[in-house]
Each structure stands twice: as structure tokens, then as C-alpha cells.
Image (cartoon, rainbow, N blue to C red; front, top):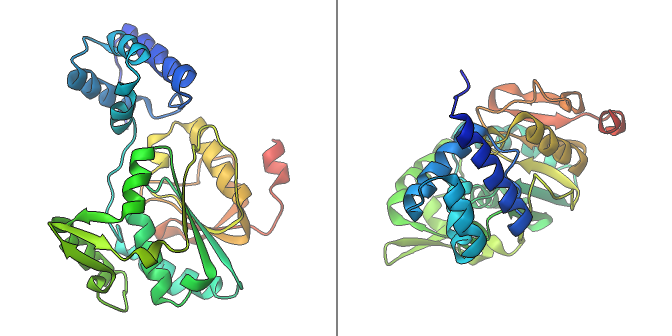
Length: 286
């Protein structure tokens, strides 16, 4: 893919805008994919009636209430339950047998957005008899997204696609067993959240907070530049127990990362990797 080229003055203004957001609000987007950020900030300018990035920066520093809405432009919250069903089928058929060998499990869903990935995994783990021994850590940088994830309410119009994805993933039950339809929404059973922790966490600035047996972070790295991708993969490697599993999105890879040696292909087609049993210290020190 050819890198997009934007006017030099707009690039400088975008640099200053991102720096201002970091220094004033402590959210670091400086390592995010440039082209995607540029387009999203252009949409934000249109939404807020700003003439350009400098005008947007000026208003953000003086109107803090704007920032909560701007987060909707800075973060991508597009997903669906059991997205890419073959990935979940691979977890069910190939990864779960290994997870069964641990007496207790911790699963980190990094970049959980509005919760679709979490509910997919919670249902899968319940169907496979692993739910009672598992703690799910659901993290995102967006407080608004985390609130939606914890509420577990999705537009009823999306449920047919969720249901088909669940079937294709090898689901052992009907998705309707896990939600109640009311007022145009599907409210997922609160028991699915009983073993979940929802917390703000930035892959750009925060550190590892728990040991995990499975890290599922899909379609998050595609919005990062190479340096931030490396940082995130380093965090995943540090978090995973020896022999733990990492799941990435269909367009994401470890191939060009300096942390690639910390992982082995487990199901290359579905972007599932396993942490090598060798120590990560040499890579961390490089």
C-alpha cells in the first residue's frame, strides 16, 4: 500500500494537535497510523465546525467537554460478535484443549471496544466448560466504549449476523440463550460478566498488569505505526505465560516485529500464535 501524502502544514498542525492531547488529557495517539488519524481528524473538524487542526486544538484546550466526543473519532469501535468465525472455531477446536490443562485461566481482551469480542469469548468459554475457572480482563482506552461493553446491550438489527457468526464458529447452543430482546435491543445475560473486569488501559503508555493464558487483540494493531505495534506486542509477550496464546486480526502479523522470536505460529491462517518457552529477556533488552 502506498503511503498517503498530506500537505506539510497539515502534518505539522496534526503533530501539534496530538501533542496537545497528550499533554493536556494524557491520551497518547502519537503512535497511531498517520493516514487513518488524518482522515478521522478531518471528520472531527467538520463535526465541530473547525477550519483546521489548529482551530480544533485551540478549542480542545479551552472546551474540555469536547474531548469526550472527540474520543469517538480518535478510537475505532467497529466490531461484531464472533467476527471472522473461523478464528473462533480455531480457538474452540485447537486452543481450548490446551487451555483445559491449566487449573485457572486469565484472558486479556486488549482493545475490547464495545464488548463484542468479550461476549463472544465468554459464550465460547461457557460452551466449552471453561467459564468457571476464567477471569476476563477487558481493556480499552475509551471510557465510553467500556461503559457500553459493561452494559452488554446491542442493536437488535445486528443479532442475525451475530447468530450466523456464532453458528459458523461451532457454537453448541443458540445465541438466543444468552440475551433478552427488549425495546429494539438485545440485552446479554449479566452472568456472562460475572467473571469480567473492565478497565481503562492504553497500549501506548501503560504496562502489563496481569499474567494471561490467552491474549485476544484483533484489529487493533492495524491502527498503530510500527513502533507502537512493537510496543503492544512486547506487552502481550510479557503478559503471556509460557505456552500462552495470542490471537491477532486477519490483517495483522508478527512477521516484521522485533518480538517475532518470542512467538511460534500455532494456526498461521487464523493469526494465532503461541509464546515460545524460551525466555523473553534477551528480546526485551535488545
